[in-house]
Image 1: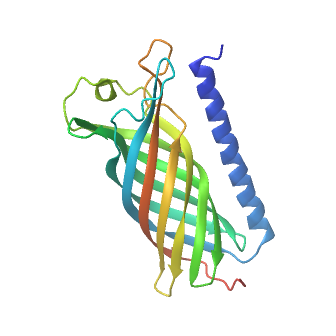
Image 2: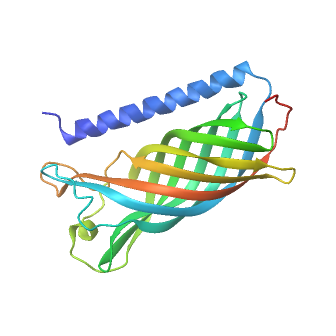
Length: 228
């Protein structure tokens, strides 16, 4: 029988394999193309979060009256594009997550988060569509419970301050002489568990799920003529 520790190890192994692949792919692209973009900037927006829960019998508790929680996100963006249509994007963000039950309680978790994303783009020089996809890691810095409650979703002690998962998003951006203006929607799928998941614990599964909508202002530090 596979133990929760074994399952956690397997998830972490897959996570780091994806990360190594993305870094290797970015290195190859940088060596095969001499027209490049080096872009930095900042982004901010809203999060819509909930949790994915299973009890010890494996029954999902996602639909038992628990709702999404609004929060904030924002941070810095670094992107290097070594190919015409592909690059590597790394971010350092503050991100609010959590879950709530209307009229009863909310539990807000504040994370520092680092996504490492493959950035695929297409379009004109001044207007682009893009897709971002890749793994992300996060560390819980603090939490806030709005209401005192003995409900297990609020009273259960957080076991794992370190979280990891996968991000997938897309949007568009305008390239102007003054800067790059970006709009993006993103879904983050947590692979780690917030609470302990041993056989005698309350939950078998307790992962973060997040939808983000952000606005970004970026600057290209290495402009070159790239034929589209």
